[in-house]
Image 1 (cartoon, rainbow, N blue to C red):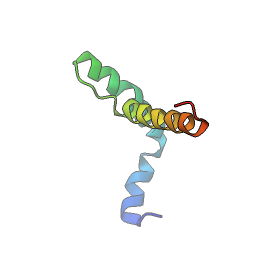
Image 2 (image 1 turned 30 degrees about the vertical axis):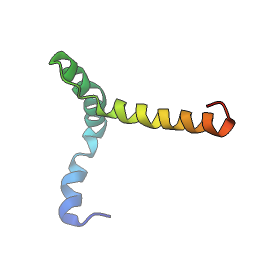
Image 3 (image 1 turned 60 degrees about the vertical axis):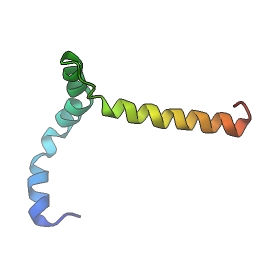
Image 4 (image 1 turned 90 degrees about the vertical axis):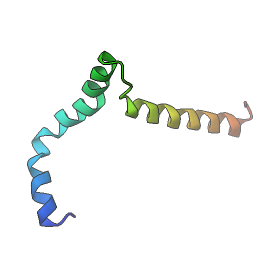
Length: 64
């Protein structure tokens, strides 16, 4: 789907995709807590989406 100029460099990263995901989801937030920074962006997004879904379900069922 990408032009060849963009597809070739990205295709070379493919074998390292799982390591990159682990780094983004686990290692970076752990390093952030060691330095006193909040780098856990994924958790904040998941938390807000989950909260919205739960509130919607409670509203639709009349429990809110």
